[in-house]
Length: 130
Image 1 (spheres, rainbow, N blue to C red):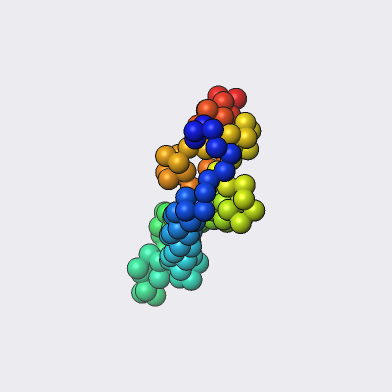
Image 2 (image 1 turned 90 degrees about the horizontal axis):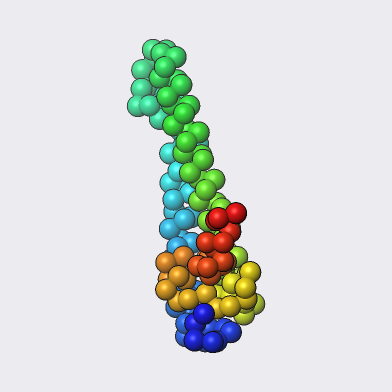
């Protein structure tokens, strides 16, 4: 627990908000990049083959796998975006930095690494063991 406090002060919250907004920009850029590379190109363009020749089945399978893999990464990034937006909402509501399980303050060190953390380290470890 962070020295017995229940909430972070405005200065600390402003720091966390800056970190979170930076992370949000990175995630949005990643999603846009993946979307452009994956969804806006035809399979021929994605593979670099713009000739009129047909594909070999193995090439088609590889291209399909690559597209699905990229879409999976984008899906994970969208989950992080949800977490980041939720953290920003908590800053506005005044509940940011409080562990959802034990209601203690999450340490600044943890929040600097994972600014959208919902749990303190102890509670996170307990959940992971289950």
